[in-house]
Amino acid sequence: MKYYLIGIKGSGMSTLAQILYDLGYEVSGYDDNLDYKFTEEGLVKRHIPIYHDGQNQLSPDTIVTYSAAFKETHPEIQRAKSLGLKIQKYHEILGDLTKKFNSICVCGTHGKTTTSTLITHVLKNTIGCNYFIGDGTGHASLDNNLFVIESCEFNRHFLSYEPTYTVLTNIELEHTETYKNLEDIISTFQTFASKTKKKVIACGDDQNIRKLKLTQEVIYYGLNDNNDVVAKNIDYSSKDTTFDCYIKNEFMGRITIPLYGKHMVLNTLACIAMLTELNIPFVNITTLLKTFQNAKRRFHEEQVKDTIIIDDYAHHPTEIAATISAARQKYPDKTIVAVFKPNTYSRTKDFYHDFATQLNKADITYLTEIESNRETALEYPGVTSKLIFDELTNGHMLTDDNINELTKIPNAVILFLSCASVSHLIEKFHQLKK
Image (cartoon, rainbow, N blue to C red; front, side):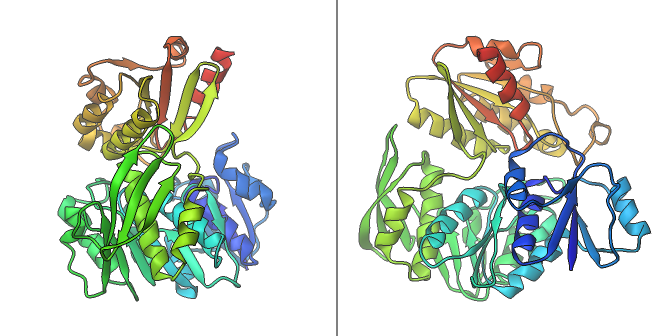
């Protein structure tokens, strides 16, 4: 069987391509983007062909899928239809995969990628696992029965999955182009978690999670004492974060993670709770957590002469607040500069005030215009970055013409924040800083 993925450089599509290839299928793909993206690493490693001109031959036994960034009117999708090829939705293929393994579905508004990566890191180095992570990282083998899958709620896609275990990090209003209100998104997470065959691991500090009515056994984690897995005596230092871990009121040991911020403590607790359910020895967990390297584009640090730059996927007000807080923990004496590229007009329209509130926690903020590959400005008249800009206390608009201003800020940590690509901004900064 052959698979052809349209939009193969997208983070989820790239991961799916890698998994299908590892499982023995013939895989190729198409993408409009000619530039190299970090999601290509796994594709290049496997020699998966990427086409750009639509001239490649597609045989009758090819199954075609495409990313949400591509509309059905796209010429490559129309070509597949004209050839009479089977078109299967991306999330349906993933749903079929979850049925073949004992699937650990990691869901929630925030923290999915890091939590999935934490769990995968420990399992890879102990009993082994397959994994689908939304940063373009994936691996699969029929020899592994466990499948860690980052499970996204966008467009209710994750309802196609069949979780053996569910890890639920938090619930907050997001994807307002898909969900009517907070109650709608809570209801959808309720539906998803209710499909869990065994246990649900959930953040008990999250009041929206506590509203769920589940028949499955729930293992709660958090900072509050009413949880099953708890972090106490947390030390947030510029070197790392450490805390005492308690399970069912029993002290298990001191945890050290090379991560920053309260949100990373919670992500780590989710990982610990899940792994102890799988009977991974606690000593193995603590040892491996010390060597954890975060997912791609999650607080990815680099020093460019006298400036620290951090590339981060934060694209929601809560995520921006967490990233700024983490930067202040690690670099308490530096000037924190946020460079934010808004993604999607709907998110900007619904959260512009919250974006400004959180961005004002940085010392200086630079905004770019909105970049969206699944929405158009015509659909959202009057929605621009200016909605956020007008509420900033120390804000500036950023273009290619004034990006040199970033190079002149002394003692700076510059956060490049977006789920859209910011690689060209970082490359431009490198060139100017030479």
